[in-house]
Image (tube, rainbow, N blue to C red; front, side, top):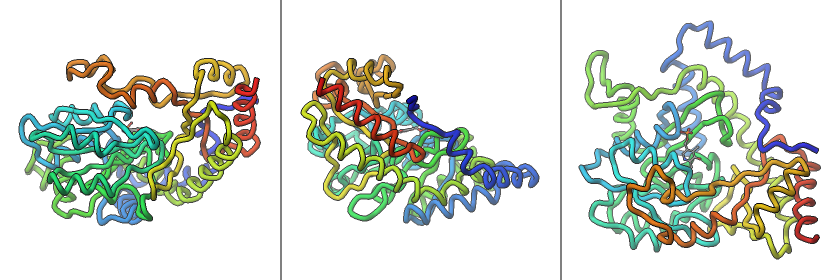
Length: 368
Ligand SMILES: *Cc1c(COP(=O)(O)O)cnc(C)c1O
């Protein structure tokens, strides 16, 4: 068997007729930027998440950048995110003009550690960005409590958590803004780059509509220094079509995760992530912590199974962010976990037999 990490071609084959029809409709309309498709998708996605507004933009990275810009941060503003995030969270903070700062993660859930966060808050901390990594959710009871106590806004990074819930509500509703990516491999992905910000704050909505479009208020009138970061009509038409399948795809992801949970249970060398109480994952990734990771990966490669690591180098140890002044040992949990985590294939078009084949091979590796 050959099992790739994702299979977007299979997904397209399944959607081909509808997607092609909707793409052709856009091409014939002659309207490509900020038209009806974008409006309709924004409305549908806001409703899906459970917020009042959605503002489409060019990428998940821009969604975070725009969200921070909408807050009008003062000079020397610092923004804290968790150190095990995907690097674009950090790029976005830098792009917004703020300084990225990091905090460590909870050993069990790998989500933002509220108590470590609290220790790192200072007078320059102007925003906090928890990341709902791997399709799960942070503990928003704790984070909202801190956000209120220190009057620092929360912005959620939901790039991996389309449809994930915490205590029944979908991620994206807990922060003052939630930032999504529609990069092709995300739970909801387009055929290029796109992103969106969701919010229920009317003032921020109005500002974000301007900020994504050169700060334009009316034609020829610019109220803010903005970006060119728009969601285009083609990608919006694709996303609108695919949004209808998101529920079903997330359910399928959960089924596959169940198979892995059951088959890998009881292995001493494999530790499962323990979600925060009340968190329901949509399994953007299925991540386990393993012993002898390199050997296991090589073994699985020989069996035709592709695995990846999300992410092998915590952000503070990336060369690009050395200037921030952190050093090895600053975030002991994230640093340890980075040497153990392994992502095994999980996507809606993975077959039961394939998931079982993967799980059985992991079992065989450790029982040898
Ligand atoms: C994918 C991702 C992003 C960035 O999204 P892009 O659309 O690629 O810019 C940001 N944060 C996290 C956690 C991600 O997984």
